[in-house]
Length: 373
Ligand code: SF4
Ligand code: SF4
Image (tube, rainbow, N blue to C red; front, side):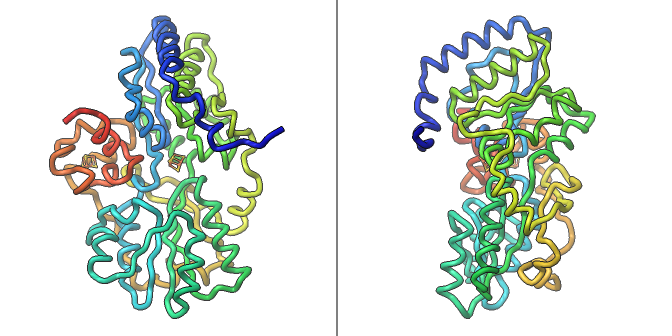
């Protein structure tokens, strides 16, 4: 049997006729629903697909979407961004992070601003790129400001694994990794929660396996369908959720079975467990969520930038801009156009809140594809 190719993940999954076919099925099935159902897409990648392909416009009135907290940039509280800013200003430090993190404003500005003031800030596509930077700059300390969900965590663990095995003396980590089930649980425990079902993330589930969602239908009465990223995937997953409601079922189903298994990538999970442990984490907009983050195990303290630079790192929590409603958006209580500065004072070129920074952020996706301003 030939192995899975990249094109197998999207071939045929953008076909307009198939999308229209699902639109009809969903419209017919939705007439049998006794009430409106609110589906939360947990993952920022799904938010992007939903907006890019106009999926909201293809759905009947009684199927609504709630945009969840699934973008690692959007959920980063300002004080963690301030950590990155302060670390970048330390003598002989090169601060390295992933993509959009560089643009998020903290209380002193963004990492981009820090760079314009002389800090050495770099962004990379893979944590392992830090190895080359460290080897080329032996007299500098490379601090990797690690962000992301279960998808990127194994790559940070692989970086640490190499640092230890190759005895590389000048790489430290500042961990900001978070996990998906805890905020899902926090959201549905909130009395104001309006979520009826979840569209489960794609990449996260490839690593963690679908097993991490089993509690949601079983213990919370919320169906989950793990969906691929393409528009056909999303339409098929919505259809699967609607069918569960009209057939009175409440289950975990996997639409993205071409890449997701129940167990996930056990090797990657073992690598993460070896170096990291669950810790409490404060989420932007959602507040403190117990055991929702990952920290370095104590035996790896000598690689922990948060411990080593503890004396200079700011400790206080910082509130968002008073007009920014990112928190309500991440909780699914509001949508971006309800923000009074959406598209005016806050745009992708001058973001006020984090949801406008990342392409996976709900505000940015609405601004780019929503045709609303
Ligand atoms: S990393 Fe992947 S799964 Fe996680 S939010 Fe981004 S797109 Fe979704
Ligand atoms: S538009 Fe900007 S200020 Fe308003 S909620 Fe979104 S990110 Fe925050």
